[in-house]
Image (tube, rainbow, N blue to C red; front, side, top):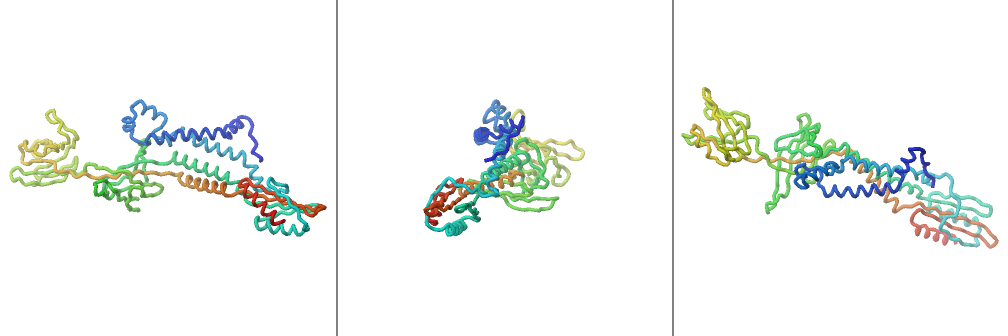
Length: 448
């Protein structure tokens, strides 16, 4: 079988490196070995989670080799490129002989490996008709050659199946470069969207860089279904895709039922609660005991009933200190009135009666705050996914042809001698030797 000639000079040494089967074995072994780390070490988690799990030393060691984002690391990409180039060069170095065999112009009138010889008393012309009819039923085209004392016949089918080997290789290369394209230009991000809010950008898991989407994702509502035991059965997000402020897609998503828009796929991945932006306070008139409930946002000012005094929510502190003691979450407010100095009011949520000690017209306390749900959305975009699918289909097709189809050849020589007519039936196949042996036997029995 002919090969592409080896280039000379430095290019020849590079060619020898990539044409080596040892390189294929070594690269596959390294990919398999390193993939173990990608399975054992959770990928694209927060740095704090890794430090808590592995400690500061191993966190820095693993981070140097990008083991926390292994499949997008520089060295993993080099392994993928090396394997793809290795397969491509190996295929090119052996393809010329295969193409010559598949697209040969002249039939090969010569005996083949598996053969059977018979003799009969029929004339050469009668046998010629029988040979041509029999081979025509099995093969598309039969080639005949007249010899001095008889004739020869050659027929073949499935020569193109020898290319399946290269189709399989090409499928692997397409698949690898599709994975590489996704690794280089794909997006793997996450975003939390509170109910009623929208976002137009996401944060990459690997680097924390904010990436604009070109559209907005709005969470209209979030619902959780529970089993009778209290365990979470399902959580569902009602999403709306907004383009220039207008809704273009509206759909609910659940786990394993994502929404895809403009190449971005939105997966339901998590949920949680955040404090509501609007806070609720109780205003109790000290004289009448009448309670008025008001809504207020941080930094906003609202009037008291009657409109003479005004209330401003200055801050919400997670852990405030009063007289040297930590009292937990605390609202810091300010009461103002024309002609009077502002009065600071401190409202610890754990002590709703604390403001009674302040001798004022109004007693303030924090009402029970409703938690607001947010939905956690994983956002991915893989520009190489179509190449991965194409390569996978090519790989399956090549494997099917390689395993279940073969190149079959039959050569028959009929010669007249002093005792009658001598017939030699021979055949060959690149696979399925038993099948071609049975075919030679059947043709011989027919001609007998």
